[in-house]
Amino acid sequence: MEEIEITWKRVARIWWLLLWRGILGWFVLGFVVSAIVIFVMELFGKSYPDFGGAAVLVTVIFSSVLGALWALLVTRWALKKRYSGFRLVLVRD
Image (cartoon, rainbow, N blue to C red):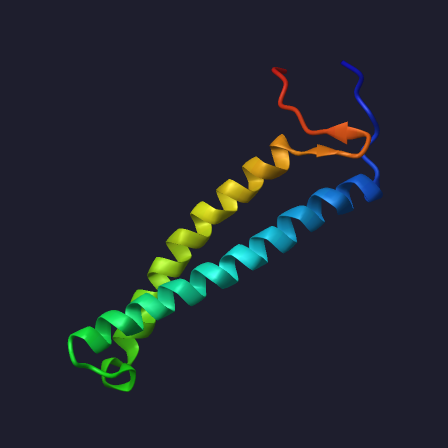
């Protein structure tokens, strides 16, 4: 197995994949969690302002947990992806 040089171009390609997929997923997950929390509150007859800080806290907690799981998934995708001219591998030291 040939080891290649770590260049800024290669680093930027990996960073870009992690960044755009991470932000997109985080945005979508945050939106979905917020919509679910608001829907559940409306189901119980409470409007969003009536719940106040509790709704925000629940949304932040769930979004954070899902965001961390999403980051793991995106990292796995980055490790499995075949880039132009290289791929990432884990090798025993």
